[in-house]
Length: 264
Image (tube, rainbow, N blue to C red):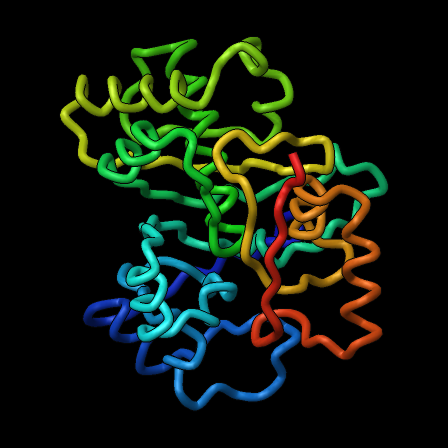
């Protein structure tokens, strides 16, 4: 069936479904990669561990095992979270007004250990690798706000794409208070991980609550990823992208990496 650009396909199979897909299927590459990928590990990060994503978080492809060890040796803490990238990542913005764009929900899993580290190191700089990691960490803040509003929420949490812009407490809760609410909720429910579905939409007027900068690739026009970048560096993104085009930087999944930060 087809609805709003989505296709729902029913499979019949014998055996373990993931093994069947691995044998018969092909890596679901973004549409701008036109060559068949013979080695599926070429489209995967060295730290990937959990099945479920439809695409690799491609900013992480720049990080080798040796580079990660160098960063650790330099005193940089490295932590991991899980986000199952959905097809919405590749959905272009086709609406005239951004409020009419529908973000697909994506599943995130963030460990209690990471939440505790963020809570006890609130003044340390947090630099996500990739827009998906950025959205996950920012979603974490708003999940904490939701729990402050309703501490009795149970099971898998859900975050609507416009909640940060309409939440009654949006300008009244700090990072530590939000993370503290999540830790209290995890203890209360005897959970080791925050599991949630997020449709968070980061637009130019969005103010990051947990992240301070971002390592990412150069993105394609009319994408929600560019909107996210503009929330960090404002209209400066136009100048940056013009420079990248003029100097033949490589864009998209196997392209060049960049580091953006908020001056404030």
